[in-house]
Length: 263
Length: 226
Ligand SMILES: Nc1ncnc2c1ncn2[C@@H]1O[C@H](COP(=O)(O)OP(=O)(O)OP(=O)(O)O)[C@@H](O)[C@H]1O
Ligand SMILES: [Mg+2]
Image (cartoon, chains in turn green, purple):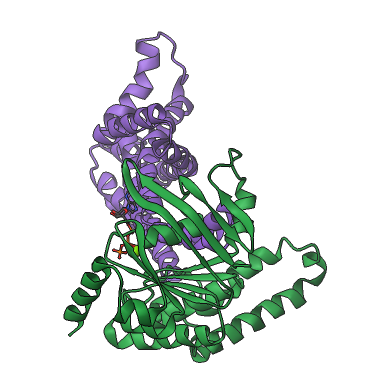
């Protein structure tokens, strides 16, 4: 069974169609990267998966269960949406860390708020808190941030902030972790450290969807690549094939333009 | 001369200053929550409510507080023939407090709105994606950032409020300016003395000095994040 199936997702803002019949699926442990020119709808697609936007049409299934179905008339309650969106994590281009919390607190906050809903929370407060802290500490260690845990976001570099944001997203153990251009807001010398972290997650078989303009990275890390153009998926498949021998003229043009820019 | 007048003048000024402080505190206590209500109205999804509230705020912020004081104090009695404020110092105080609370609530509401709108949407979205409830996002993520954003402009308004209380002299509220002026016209055997009026400035300066100190301390305490 696929971990994620997206079926015919359509989304318009006003009269402009932003996503046109998006369909794809992915398996557990797979890394999918999405490339495409600016305005092609990549961010909108990730936002639909994370319930920040609601598709006008289509279905989204996780492990075979429809967590979103536009044909269903019943509107979901906030509590249901909250539960469903925990299948996904999202790492933003601009990090969106909480400035008043340290790196460690940023990672712990959502876990602690969720723990309050557990039935054993009252009785076991101390132990639960300690487990959460240990989990957060080990996540930050994995990100190479053991010595930065007590720092506030404004005391961290962009690359460090993004790694905290990744740890924060991993903390809730989402089935699928989405990245929206995780290195676009970073100075070139800082992109490497973030890409390395994402690469190591791929090696640990984390299921990920990565929207990126780092073509070399997409080719190396992804198991599948999707090329989006004007709100539609134009091409998808094995990265070696898409990058070296695209079947669509538009893909070829896009890749050539990118190659020219990066030289 | 001045030295002889001191024991008479200072107690009189103190009495006036207590009235000044009372007006200041009552205004603050009333305008801080009322401002929040007005702020919510000015950001309401209901267009009509939003327009009415914003128009009201525009009128209040666009016209002199002194006129508002005069209208609120005299209008009920002169136009409705129903002097709701009653006579005497209590009536004048109530009218002044009402005018100040309404006026300052409008200024505060705009500061709150600026504070709320200064929080990037990414903060809310990050919270949502992490499975937080709207209320948790407000209290755990946004509130402190809002407070940090509004403390500097609120400090300015609060300092201005201390000085603005003197406007209530226009409806003869017996605050400190009124008390100082009394010695020009003649009171307790002193007349034609102008120094008590000038001396009232010292009270304002000391009061604002203390407030500035407290508020900048608060600002410092919130400077651990950006
Ligand atoms: N809330 C919105 N309201 C109206 N239009 C929107 C909204 N969000 C996005 N759009 C439009 O949808 C289109 C696709 O935007 P999207 O951000 O998904 O593109 P993208 O592929 O992520 O581009 P980029 O590479 O620049 O990030 C753009 O034309 C954008 O202007
Ligand atoms: Mg985008």
